[in-house]
Length: 105
Image (tube, rainbow, N blue to C red; front, side, top):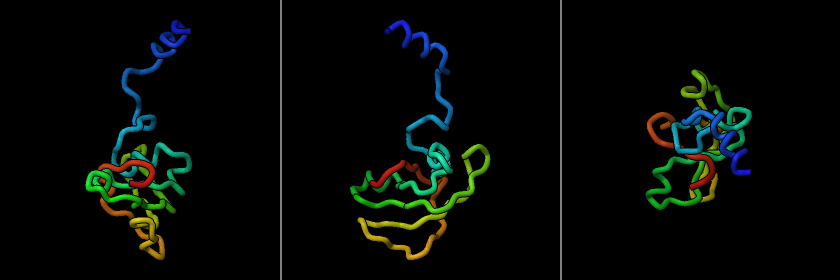
């Protein structure tokens, strides 16, 4: 069994492509990892967790990804401390400036 695992690992590249990584990244890289461009997914800025702000996230409603998921546009609804803040979908800001992760903070 161990031999098989090593053989399979030998076939994989030493560094995973961006679409398979699970580390925090810009918003578009995080969304491009999910099926359907991340529509319906919850995402949050890493700095919210670092500041101790809990249960805050964006619920993604629409995306337009380009350049293999490194850039684009994303829209969603903001939930802050568990309550919906935005009534209608709005463009998600800070998408390239901050690190993002899937789930809520």
